[in-house]
Amino acid sequence: MSELWDFTRTSVIQNDLREMKEIWDQWDNETKQLFFCNYGDLPYLLSVKADKYLFRALAQFWNPAYSCFTFGKVDLTPTVEEYTTLLRCLKIQVDKAYSRAACVSPLLKKLMNITGMREQWVAARIQQKGIYGLVVFPKALGHIDEAVSDLLDRLSKGVTPVPAILAETFRSLNACRRAGEGSYSPQEELVATPRRDDVSEEKWMAILQNLRDEDVEWRAPWLIPDEILYR
Image 1 (cartoon, helix red, strand yellow):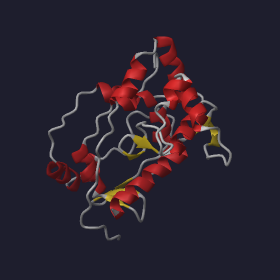
Image 2 (cartoon, helix red, strand yellow; image 1 turned 30 degrees about the vertical axis):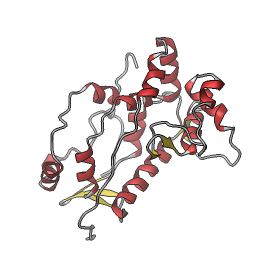
Image 3 (cartoon, helix red, strand yellow; image 1 turned 120 degrees about the horizontal axis):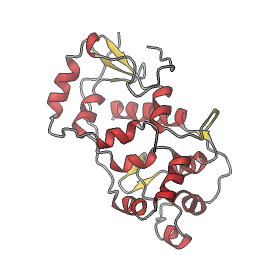
Image 4 (cartoon, helix red, strand yellow; image 1 turned 90 degrees about the vertical axis):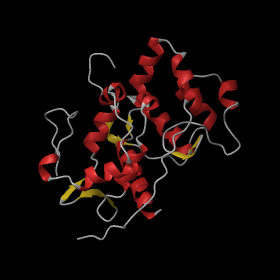
């Protein structure tokens, strides 16, 4: 039995993504397909709208001692298999996990490689902090840790970022408690699915608190049949 904290408050303010969307929109289909090939389904993150009330409610049920969500007698945790499928990067080598190298290429060159934009454009958007205004894992609004650009740069080389991203998820959740064509894309379907955004935090709390064993599916619906998950 673990003793969870009584209450925690989570900030889920989203970055302004207009500039990133404008970059994406000005590319032709061939360039977009090349980006999908190198970086998987990451561009769909530009269209995902966070449900702040759901996130705030979920944070109350995260158990940092066991790195899982605890809903009554039910424990759930994100898995490597789920993240691998959600990322859907075809070039990933599962035996070649990402780790940040001691000697990395300059930030300017990495951002030029990732965005496909010219040096002058990229240089104008590197701020004094040495950080670029992307969306993944924001440390502050309009900024990200430079390590994220290194992770994206290495994706095109076939390394799998899944363990690093999963670890970042666990670390972030613990911090909350302390303070393509012809293939199925889960994120693409998520973006296209109409979702209600008028459910209050109190309502989400009530739903999650009253979950029963039979209400929970132990296997994510987007995983292919031959993948095995342990519960």
